[in-house]
Image 1: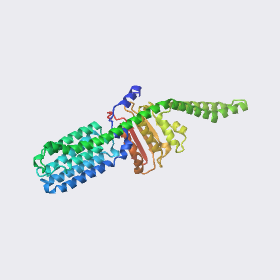
Image 2: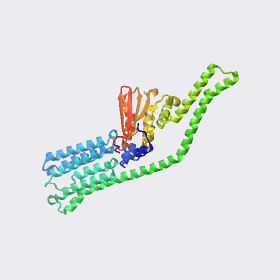
Image 3: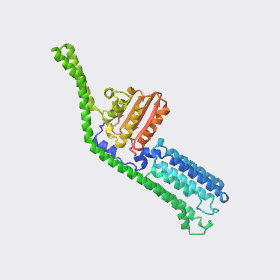
Image 4: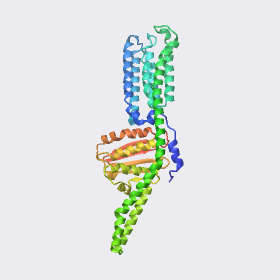
Length: 404
């Protein structure tokens, strides 16, 4: 079996990923999701209003109504695809949605071609601009700006070509500018917000990492003291009374020999457990301790099977989310604490599987975990939840292609 060496850890942690607010601050972007359907409703509503206003200028009413339907489909797709449950929002979704929106805008332009009085109240450029306001939350700024330029050019050219038939006679360049400006302006506004949000998030991460580095030595020392205290507790609870009893009696019996062997095994197992503890084991022990389960029982029950220490591959962001998933699972009202197991496998592309028995409605379980699983997918991991009766399985793993 391939071991998880330092080179693999570096490779998994350093694979580049898209610098978007959704990737860097998934929970924050989840809270802003409602803006997408609101903008979609606004775009479709304005398209309907504008079409009514152009009713006496329609050359092809069926084409105009078809354009509204296309815009509606694009808005539904944007709202659905941007939903936290389907994170992350990919390049294919971005290009497909914007392509349909551009086609819808050009279809409306064709529907009023030659009869349009002015282009200032056409809905095409407004609808595209409204979609591009929210897009930088999900896609890289450079990608959004390229789409904005292409969209502005397409709408600008179509407007410039109508210059001769419009009520106000002026240069085609003016009409090109009138159509292109809202698209570029609102796209730049959305990109500026995303740029600021991304920069602040990255700066906060650097501060957090420096603070973590300063605390590492103290945390290691604290961990050593905790292990020592646990060993001393074992000695005080079992070994010291046994030795005191031997001194009082002044003789060693066969039963004493057997008891001494039991204590030796207990101390050895405790030492091995302390050495073999993993981050996953500690996190699970802490979470279950809140339900009254003894942390030592958690370790002795072998609830975590991670012989290759694959949890070392998890980045700080991933650990925060995985820890939150473990804590949330441990806090489920219907959980059987003794049923929780975490198994780690596949060092090349580490994958983790958490299983448990939970006597609770599946809807409540999904509601409690869906946001965290979605956030984990946003930070470059596959994550899913399966529920079969009272048995739940949470799987999170590095994707085989490491597409981040």
